[in-house]
Length: 101
Image (cartoon, rainbow, N blue to C red):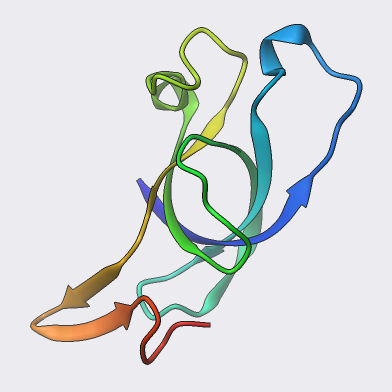
C-alpha cells in the first residue's frame, strides 16, 4: 500500500466494457511527511474518494483483489480514504484537521 492524494478525475467515454462503472482518479504520490512526490498514478476508485482526499492505494495484481475490481484490467486501486495517521506517537494527519488540504 502507498499513500497518495487524489488530484483529479479521468473521463473516458470509449473504453473496454469491463471498465464500465469504474471511476478513475488521478493520484499524486505523497510521503509520510505529506509532501508531494514526483509520481502520479491513475487508479480505479473502489471506495468513493474525492479530489483532495488522502488515500491508500495498491498496484499490480493486488489491485484486482477488491470486490469492485475483481477480474477487471486495472493496475491500481484506491482501497481506503485515510482519516488519520501517526508516526512515533505524533499525529501527522487528521482529516479535517491540521495537515489536511
